[in-house]
Amino acid sequence: MKPSIAISPIIKTDSTVIHLYNDGTLHSIDTHIKIKKDVWVNDGKKYHFNEISHHIEKCVTYTNNKLDGSTIYYYDNGLVEHIEQYSEGAKCGTWKYFNNQGELIRNVYY
Image (cartoon, rainbow, N blue to C red; front, side, top):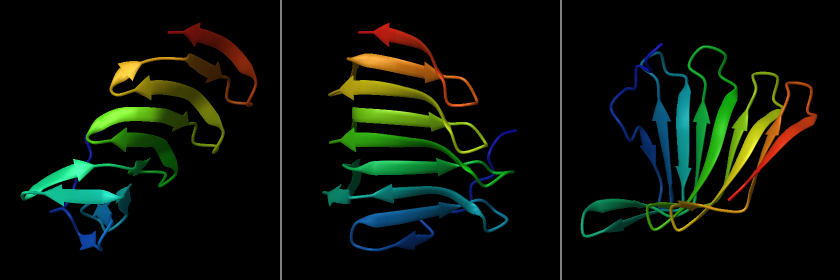
């Protein structure tokens, strides 16, 4: 199902933007947003939520609009599905994959 994102940003403070689905439920939260010459720059964490279950789907870390640090995906039961690592937008480190009971099932090395 394609997300039905409302006009965004819905709520904005100095460093946080909250995006909502059309039904008013939470879509995502961006933290540590900076504006440089009227351009949004992701420089922090972004939390994505499932439109139907409203559970967290993933948490992404950015530095200067590039993936940088951990990206964590979650099962609907709240357990971690997998963890990716990035450095300045490039895959790096050990990516870890878990089953829906939280057991490590695979490592991928970059």
